[in-house]
Length: 110
Length: 114
Image (cartoon, rainbow over all chains, first blue to last red):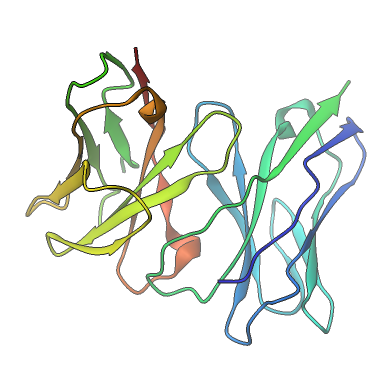
């Protein structure tokens, strides 16, 4: 399973766009990139998944360059409620176990 | 439609004791995975159950065992508790073959070992 590297923490302000970048230099051809969000004392929640280029849903966008060695989660116009830990994972999908790293602790300031 | 539920929400045990945690999967799901999350760390995979059998296992000792029932609910048992077993224990359910983005997590059980 490919290892991922993310910043340990980030601060931003309400209304700003936040971009969290994840490095996965050893990503395999069959690997997908998935992001989860976790609030304190809650289980992780799926945000978005992609394989290449750009994916957008109602919550976030995911940008993946052509070499797929990194990816960027973009959260538009964040609010205080977006304060959470964000995990980047790469996996082949199917029924494999999920391998979490330490994630990025995002703190949104008023 | 109930999501993943876990019980109890909090638990305090003494070193050396045994504990059983319970999980009910989201309706329609048949696979249950268990994770341990220490404070400030990401969740660590313990094992996964499908068709009442352990299908995959992470790097956890045999003190950690589990069970899945015919209704797909699951139990996590930990014997001979150590102080280091204090953590949030998360249960995630999915439908076999649906991929990791279809894993739904419960709120967890906070276990404190004193």
